[in-house]
Length: 193
Image (spheres, rainbow, N blue to C red):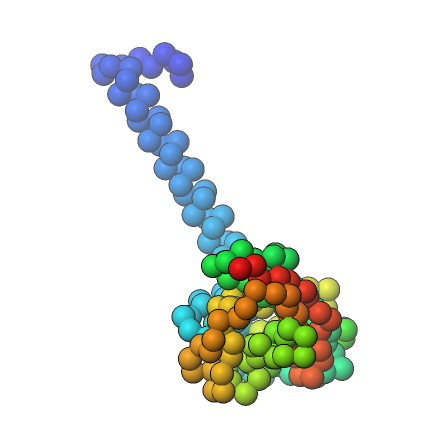
């Protein structure tokens, strides 16, 4: 009966109904998985100040019993990029992984991060002194590193970060991320012409 439908209509009608039902179930499952895996990160904005996207759950205000603010003694930070070489026109995705060395969660503001790209002794890009791209706060929990990311538009930063500066030249660059004065190691990447 399953393989050979019986009824007043043509078998094609029953098979069509079965396929539509199966597709509907698959769509519902995909939506459920996508919703459960979606993060609460903020979206990126155009211009020289992309919005940071915390991978931990942001909170807008502290409530009674909320975790204390992170201190520099609580944190370690690592910097990375999504590739080591970027062809012309490809924008580098910068990432920071933040961990707590404490035994309890602590709260950190996304604006506490300073991103810096240098080439030799020349500072090419920095968010230091720029208005905060995000006012979100997030939890850094023991054994659960928090990740933030941004896209660099391959331009030099300018005072106030209002508009992009000149395009960065092809070459070798180093990414550093600082959080509350804790500085990451270096992530080296290259811009191709």
